[in-house]
Amino acid sequence: MLSKVRVAAVQAEPRWLDLRAGVEQTVELITEAAAGGARLVAFPEAFLPGYPWWLWLDSVGGGPGFFARYRTNSMIVGRAEFRRITDAARRNRIHVVLGFSERSGNDLYLSQGLIDDRGNLVGLRRKPEPTELEAKIFTPGDRVQPYVFRSAIGRIGMHGGSEQLRLPARQDLERAGAQLHVVSWPGFIVAKEVGWGVRVNTAATLWYAVVGGMFVIAPCAVMDVAGSEQRRGPDAGKRLVRGPGGHTRIYAPGGRELAAPLVGGAEGILFADVELDLSAVHAA
Image 1 (cartoon, rainbow, N blue to C red):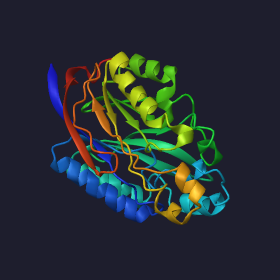
Image 2: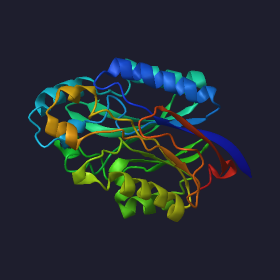
Image 3: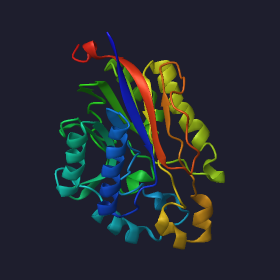
Image 4: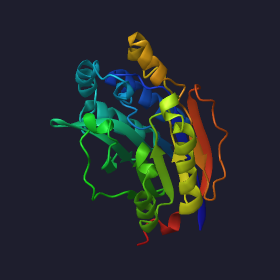
């Protein structure tokens, strides 16, 4: 028996390197999505405290200073900032897929958390294969960890950004019976050296919907010269990493777009109604 479920995908610029402001923004977006009738809202990769775009600059001379601030403003699961987000999910009766930089001991992880509509953390994934640049600051997560988590609104799969380009990742989702798949992108940079970013990455998202036969929710951040801190960066860096970045999409199985996309620099939330077989949620 099919049931209609409204989902939402965020396209917004993070509050760069400011965890407190970022949590406030996240709570506001959760509330807005719930007011729009959504039972699930998904956020971009490393939305808190923003993706570390300085890694893409031709020189990482500014890296140590950025890293110290980045680490300080990364979130610890279970601490007050995280509880504010879980409380918002419970208060608004909405599921949340949150992309964030997770601080655990001396390590940072590119993490995604699935929070249910009762405010419980029911799934946590740490990106197992960061890109070469990401690996400069992020620790790989366990390669043997769940991709799909059961919830009251279906079986939800989660991947972060570049994981989409790995064939085994889609096969794992299919084997686990994902109904909704969230791929959290950090934003797509526009530069001569990586001019394929938007085209290839959006195609990878679409491919999951077509070949995997699942609904795909792809939140994507808006960028402004690698975040406000880079406005004072070198001109070469500004040319390499620039926005607008946002290409949020929601696809049906087969690849039909279920929501009219926003332009790359616009902030907002995409909503779409999907039909899921909720009677199969607890099936093996």
